[in-house]
Figure (cartoon, rainbow over the protein chains, first blue to last red):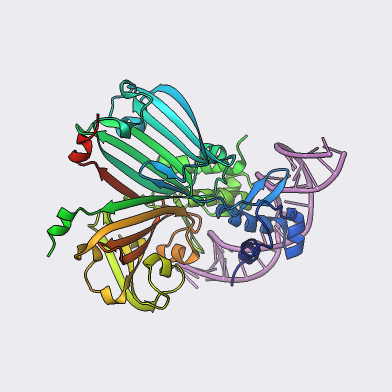
Length: 223
Length: 223
DNA sequence: GAGTGGTCTAGACCACGAG
DNA sequence: TCGTGGTCTAGACCACTCA
């Protein structure tokens, strides 16, 4: 037997899907909705929390609950985000020294001078992706590592998790919405780490795409 | 100012991290914990819900709340899961016909005969990954597509989301724990889809790794 | 049957946003 | 100031597990 919370969430979901509740529209206030569904406010809030983790609604303190605009999905492919038109990028550069996780990630000794590039991508006024790129200070230039000689290999590790509170607030997403976290490390021909990047993409509006080709030589060896 | 929920969650988190609460241990009952922290049961349950989304505890109805065993992380690499020792795989084969999402995914007409392979991977008694692989019936053999002649390209799309209730129950994870969802499509040299796979991996214990090499020819062209 | 977590109620009080 | 959502309380009742 489905819980009241799920029943209410289902109903609101279909109202959004069918267009009875349009993007950007404000939902009735929580006490009002609770009265409509004949439940207590905590139960109704529980249902709204579900829709929030799905990225369907946005709760704004003091204003109300709003149906979110279904923005086009971002796709992360080979270090780039597509579509890259209409994307606005803010970059902040900081100098720091290697510590914590960065030491094994960049394979450098503790306190090695590093440069951090903080990328914040916006699409139509709303933040869409957060990237922190770390480069050994002696390699730091305006150029991107993949455009620099010597780049030989990248390793991209992808995890799904809940955002930290900082990530949630900078991306302006619910702290219950899953994010795609990508750790990308680029190596040169000697195996030295040229850059390490940590990307965070909201799960409801981004995905990552990897394309693997098999060369004709590899195909030639088969029975 | 941090909420009571966050304060309690932080405290329990550090107790688990420091080993005061060991893996497999049962936490005191919820009314007991609520009394310890001097909060109401809903507030305490809210804190536990947080730990649950992080995969730190497991709630078992009628038994209690348990600290989860930190199982080694699975890594999905190139269609395989590592470590592949100690993994037990159950396969169920079903015949069906193309419908819904499968039609554009496999690029086949509606009602095309398909074979579904359902893979359920277990590690030390607990389910770890769920895969549904679809193959056009005329190509379905016991062989894996990537071992078969003609395979030329794969596209892997990765998203982060909350599991469906079915996925949560088969993987025995909380429905609030983020999962890594991978859609993998394999093409032959003519562009025909050989197989389409949908994989679901629990976010707290799995990640995906992609390694990109640049060939010496590509490196040779740079300035 | 005793003890556990799951769901829900009907409120109280606080913090934020806009006029 | 008013209406909004955010947090929290102190319970009730149900469902599940195990002896």
